[in-house]
Length: 317
Image (cartoon, rainbow, N blue to C red; front, top):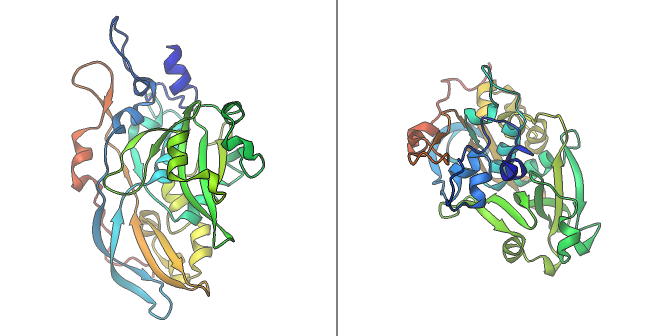
C-alpha cells in the first residue's frame, strides 16, 4: 500500500484509477506496478499516427482559403500525454463513485507555443524551480530532486531564434531523477520510464541552449479540458493565427482540432498542420492473468476508435 500511495494516489488520487495490482508472496514487482492504471496500460506501447483529409481553413499567407481539403494527423506527443494525465488526475469522482480518470484517455497535441503557454499558466501551475535561476540543478542530484514530488512536470525548452520560447519536451516526475514520458510523436517511440541522464542525452544540457523548469499543478484545481485548452477556440490559438475564420467555426469543430503553424521571418504563416483531438472513453481493463495490472481494451488497437466526423457545414453561418 505504501508504494501505491507514493507513486500513485499521492498525486493521482482517484481510487478506481490507482494501481489495482495485488500482492502475492514471492512475486517480483516493477515500479510500473505501482503507477496509475493509465501508465501501466500504456507502458511500452507505441502509438501509430493516423492521417485523414478534412476540409478546414487554410491560413498560409497569400494562399488563404476559408475551406480547403488538407491532410490532418492524429497522434499524441509528450506534452499532450502529460497534460492528459494531470487533467484526469484532478477530475471529480464520476457518478456512482470512482475518479473520472478511469473513463478514458485524451489523445491530443498542440503547437509548442500553445503548450508552453498552457504549462506556464499561473492559474493552474506553480513554479517549483528552474535551471535559469539555479544552474546547479543540472549537475547536483540532491539539489535537483529535493523539492520535487510525484506528479510534478519537467519541461525542457529553448528560445527559438534567441527570442521566442519553444517547448521541446515534457515528462512526469515519478521519483528521484526518474520520469514517465511519451518519448515523441513518431511511431517507433514508446510510453516509458526515463531517467534524467536519458533526458540529458537527448537534450544536452551542458551546451547551454536548453532551459529546464519544473512545475506543479496547483492544489485543488481542475485543469481545462484538453480540447478546450489545445483546440482551435482557445484564446492563444486565436491570437497566434489572427483570423476571424476560427471564431466563425462551429464549436464542435473548434474542439476537434488543434493547429501548429510555422512562421517566416516576417511572422507570416508559411505552413500549417492540423491534428485532431479525441477523447477515447472505453474503460481500462485488468489483465487476463488476474494480477491486477491494467491493460488497454482491444478497442484502443482499432483505428476506427479514433475516427471523427465533421458537419457538412463547419461554420456557424
